[in-house]
Length: 72
Image 1 (cartoon, rainbow, N blue to C red):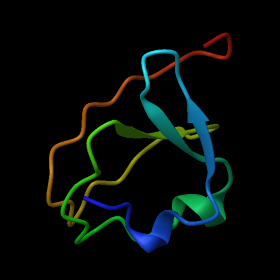
Image 2 (spheres, rainbow, N blue to C red; image 1 turned 90 degrees about the horizontal axis):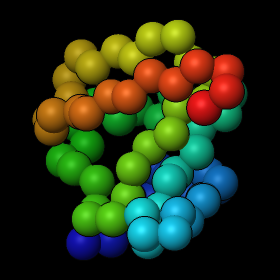
Image 3 (cartoon, rainbow, N blue to C red; image 1 turned 180 degrees about the horizontal axis):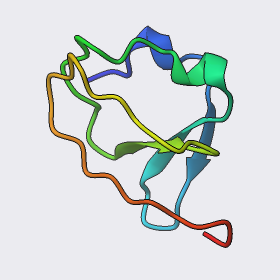
Image 4 (cartoon, helix red, strand yellow; image 1 turned 30 degrees about the vertical axis):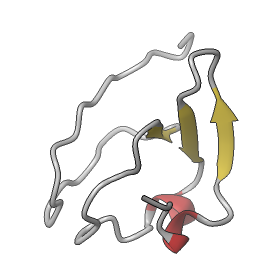
């Protein structure tokens, strides 16, 4: 599966285990219209930086959310 074009332009961080984080930093990058997205490709995850809430209305797949404090 290829990565949906709506993620083009997002910063990518590859972790030691090979997982690629797609980083959404500001309001604009978080407004990607994730509703109606079928899923993320294997080995990819979204990192919502400086975000106090996530709206899941219209999501077609389950999200596993982890909240981090200012120290990660």
